[in-house]
Image 1 (cartoon, one colour):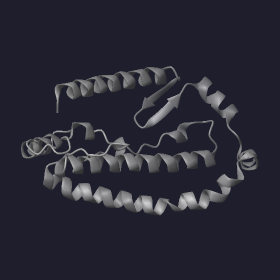
Image 2 (cartoon, rainbow, N blue to C red):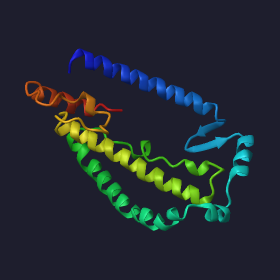
Image 3 (tube, rainbow, N blue to C red):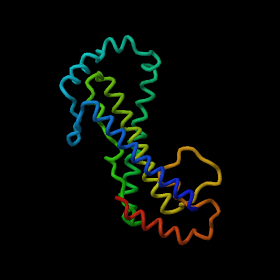
Image 4 (cartoon, rainbow, N blue to C red):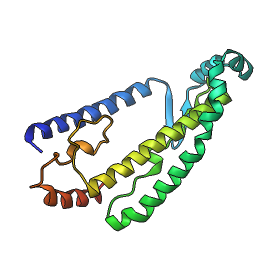
Length: 195
């Protein structure tokens, strides 16, 4: 990787750190605290949230009909999602120790906290729980597959692709055969040191 790309990646990492800090600062202004896995709002905020909650019957009447009609299709996807979760979790549990790759912590990606929001009714909380699981699972799987790709084939594509994972920019350039063998072992060793 050339020096210019290394500098840009370092700048991106620094900006991501700044963004995380800014988001945390913004969250601290929202009058909530995280205590373990629990999110607690100040009492005045809780009261305001309760006033904004739409009761179930009003929500049902004002909801878009297409949302109700497609609900069974959306929620039927829970079965393939759970099967993917089981398979990818088993894969990394069984294989990553053999490869010397640090396992991905599922709880870092699949987080359920929107049910603490007092302005959501029970149906909205149910929707949020489903989305938290589905999107968290995809992020969890992406990280497992990214580590797998970095272990076996850390090579960029010749074609530009959208939606690359966080490891991708460090991969070898397409066609860089001279560095492949030396870098492959370096990548593998580094995967065992991820915290």
